[in-house]
Image (cartoon, rainbow, N blue to C red):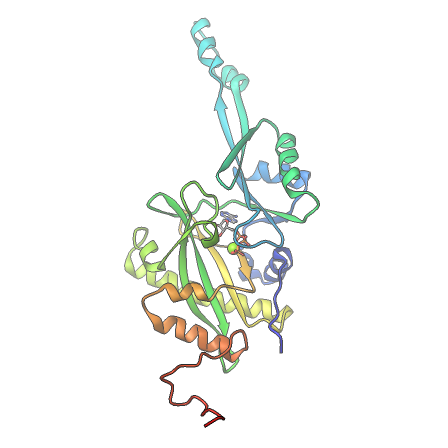
Length: 291
Ligand SMILES: Nc1ncnc2c1ncn2[C@@H]1O[C@H](COP(=O)(O)OP(=O)(O)OP(=O)(O)O)[C@@H](O)[C@H]1O
Ligand SMILES: [Mg+2]
């Protein structure tokens, strides 16, 4: 049977939100339009805007709000001997909207102007807006985690791999295809927590992989593998940024512990994603018919 793939992030998010305990991991996510943009900008200082059907971090944008005090306020303070501070702050405080994508940053003064710039890039495609998570950092670069869950040959779900992805300098996405680097989860977490906490975080991630796979399977019975993108914020809370139904497995070859990839590959062979490798050392390989 063909492995089911679900490209729409929106469709997958709705299925996860049906499960109350899993919904706690999903950052506020909505379909993009001007009113939603305005609402989200009231609620959050940073938001992500991304294609409903995207991958490799392509098309992902971020908007941040900054309140700046214009330099004229300083002049005014000097002129006015007894200034009313509240009045000056109110008059001079200006909200700026900074839009980032790739390594570009643009500044706007109203949500409408920001929307116009976004609209140019979105065109007629479906985009989502998501509450921005302030990701933990490694050597001053934000990182998130990829958790792979697969169907075992006996038909259960198992979390078989996890790794961390560190954003390339000045990038707003951590994706490997956008220049990000891969590190082990332990390496990334050890600067943020004690070893015992790191261990319980890894167990929590393993369990989340299995639970989310089960929840998605209830609507998409043909899925066999998923890749969770998990963000951790400054409070060590976990957030599910998205679920991939065609996750990279080759990326796990990068680890020195080859047993991890061997198991991932074995499961992928069992559910038919990849063909079994012919090993010249295998004693069980089929005898040649020409012999
Ligand atoms: N809400 C968010 N808060 C913080 N960072 C985010 C958020 N959404 C996305 N990102 C960053 O952007 C990256 C790409 O976003 P996302 O995974 O949703 O898109 P994608 O293009 O589908 O990626 P993939 O190749 O994994 O399918 C994330 O891995 C993360 O680094
Ligand atoms: Mg992703």
